[in-house]
Image 1: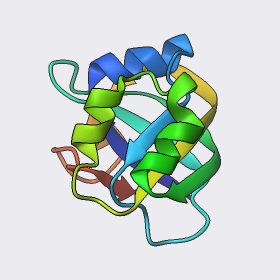
Image 2: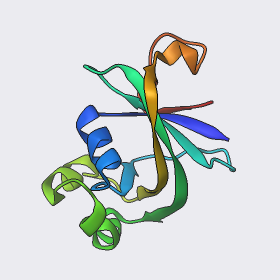
Image 3: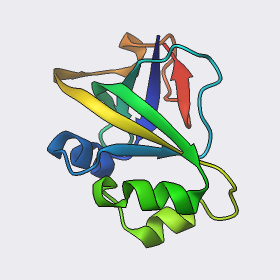
Length: 123
């Protein structure tokens, strides 16, 4: 099963460069069997630009997730701490085998809607 995630273009670039090996989330998909993430690069790109396989998903407190992932986070600790402020649980999706699409696609080519999900949607 696949999910489509909305990710800011600066972080998409870091994923594709290999600098960012974890995608952080405050909440996670409830369905089991998700193996692939399709990447929607938010505005100003506004296109589906690639995908990656999920190696594993780490679940822990934000403090522990940062300890385990900081060297491959692609972000700084201040941003991480602000993102998870007030949260008891954090999720880190480990990125594997990313693929950049030759031609970015409009979201309606992937899902039956014209606007992207705020966080994610199942494909």
